[in-house]
Length: 341
Image (cartoon, rainbow, N blue to C red; front, side, top):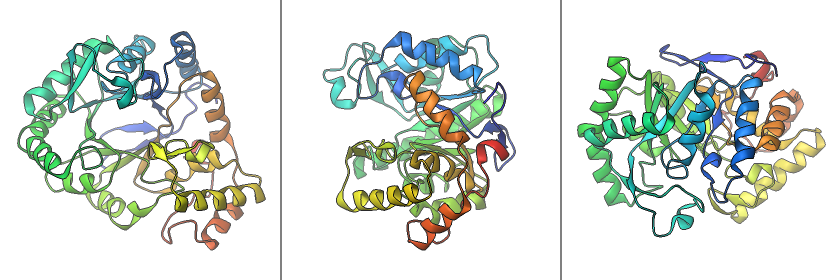
């Protein structure tokens, strides 16, 4: 890809456009293993040369480390940036950050707070950590029972509904940000949020992939009906679709391993890279505007660009459907969405 070659798609509500390929910033925070910061900086510089303009990050990623790295890379550029709210970073190292997935974080402790004041504070804190004067999109991070107990989540949702949403809407109405949404790993909380908010998009990690398509039964039709777009994070299901040994941040269960084996066999028959299919598949759905795989270094960037450039035959998608490996209503890309969107 050359500079500015990544196609753009409009949100369903028309409020803005996003590139179909974006940058997922969790690995920049040192997710599961510490980063080589020099290698990460080199990779970030290369993304811009390959046409990237949309970057996603969060305070939680390395407890500020990812936001700092993203801000350093984007300063002075015409970027599109999303970060997240729902956690404040308090001074002082967490007692066991490695257990939370961050073995080398900055010396802060995250604290959940989805209220009005906390969201305003989080937005301002992120601008400071980024060293930037603009954030385009704010996602409410990790609300839902995937992260919280049912009781705690009910309380968090009430706080968001009664106060936090008002903060987000005020920031959007004032022009400080352009769009709002949730950044989560589950569909149920997105469906609940649609009952009380005018959301521009949901960042959905891992729930609409080659391995999982149950969102077609409820969330995705509801998104179309409400003109709420979807950004797909975690397109590889925590690495399972690129040969890793984790799914949903834990070991791969037997039924998922069986489906993976069938997907790999079908990909081999058609001479298709399974990660390429994983990146291209979600964009066939009308609600999906962007896919944002996480990147850690230049090798991962090179692989991603190769997979987005790969041509996949219609016969491969037909074979997946005939084998029952796709949801019966799942749309498939007729052309490469990174080339023809």
